[in-house]
Image 1: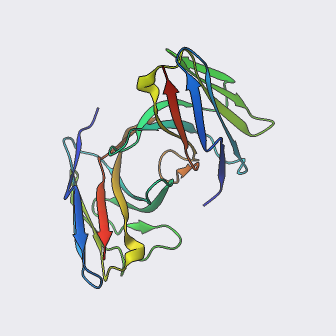
Image 2: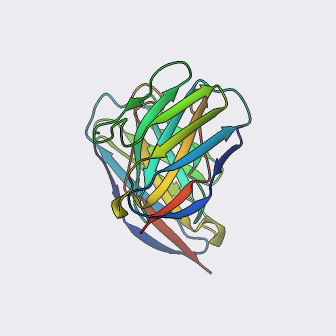
Amino acid sequence: SAVISQKPSRDICQRGTSLTIQCQVDSQVTMMFWYRQQPGQSLTLIATANQGSEATYESGFVIDKFPISRPNLTFSTLTVSNMSPEDSSIYLCSVEMSTDTQYFGPGTRLTVL
Amino acid sequence: QQQVKQSPQSLIVQKGGISIINCAYENTAFDYFPWYQQFPGKGPALLIAIRPDVSEKKEGRFTISFNKSAKQFSLHIMDSQPGDSATYFCAASSGGYQKVTFGTGTKLQVIP
């Protein structure tokens, strides 16, 4: 299994600022994923982050708004840039450990005022 | 992303009863169908998953039924317990977890 931690667990930010969310895994993984989950809603994949390469973004998400770093096999960051109230959401990182096994972090609850 | 339709949106079941959640998909390239359980304030946790080469998979009280021709799959929770109260998401993907599409979620409440 994998233990995933995220920092911060929650934050309240002002419009126009940026927040960087950290994701730490207790073992080395090749693929890490970032999701967004608006309260009471489903999960939407933002991007896939592989170590040593550029992140791959899903339709509707761009690098300028959600830059991602993946400096090693256990860590990744997602930055939410130039925030607006529409960015208020829960951001989750996820890892694929092996075939048929995916683990999610506890999420970062972001509120933008 | 390709759609995965999930119903019902919410479900109330008596303790000991059977909870049934249904999902339907469109993309015939999907080859992996996981279900996730999410408690408030937590990330989703993989519950059970199935591939289209089998029609049913059972793990404890949880069973997935899969109908490839109808492009439908469902989760059955037998002997439902109050501790099963959570939101359940079906999902579908092709090629592992790189392109997972989630359903809209079902909030299950099991009452004593």
